[in-house]
Amino acid sequence: MRLAYVKGPPVAVFAGSWRCSTSPVDGVPIALGEPFGDCDPGVAKLISIATTVRYVKLMGAKVYVSNSLGEEGVDAAFAGGADGVLEELSHAWGEYKEGAKFVVFSTSDVAELVNAVRGVAERAGRPFDVLVATSFDKAHVFVPYADGIVVTGGWVGIELAEVSRLPEIGRCINCGVDYLMYSGSLRRCIYCGRRLIRVISSTRPPRSRAVFRSVFNKYKGLSSLRLKIV
Ligand SMILES: [Zn+2]
Image 1 (cartoon, rainbow, N blue to C red):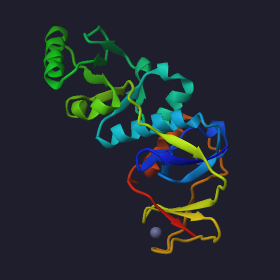
Image 2 (image 1 turned 120 degrees about the vertical axis):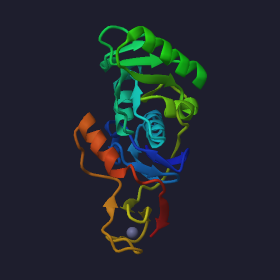
Image 3 (image 1 turned 90 degrees about the vertical axis):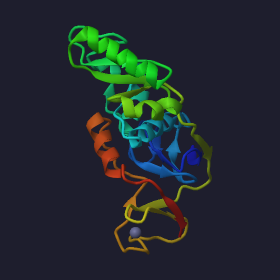
Image 4 (image 1 turned 180 degrees about the vertical axis):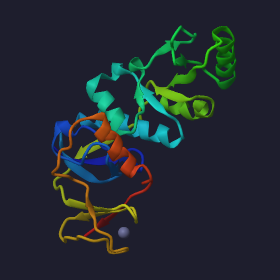
């Protein structure tokens, strides 16, 4: 099904190329309103996870997810820039455990968190990193007090809709413009002259965390995208 990104934040992160015949590469931002691929509508959930992780990253946090998201959800999280999977870390919940590098806290407010952390530290007498398990809407409260956030839910709402045409899209990262080529064809940005990058890609990089991470890093500075019809 040819799909556009019709509702959600101004910029989302695409994930789920493995459910598409035509699509961007996983980790590539897509703009609100933009047609982006020929995919199973189930990619909405994957785009939602990737986008949520990106926005928590932009708050300045390290972001972890649980493997209860399933293989596809975890891959989507890495497309959004996730730093790791909780179950793959040496961790303990709420109390220090011998050998743990991370202690995960789940609290309702900052005072409760910092006092719980101090209590654990007094008993542990060992260094550990503090992770806070929380939903997306609360993440900003805890980011200044934690070494990382484990996102447990509250995923950003993403809606997709079927469209009749899928134009070629050329992107200028410098200007933050996506050229939707419904009639014309451009190779260079009309504002700055730089060569445009194709958003919908024919290349299929391997479905690996290292690849997701490098694509995320390439675009992490891109905060807005304007659509231009040509
Ligand atoms: Zn430009």
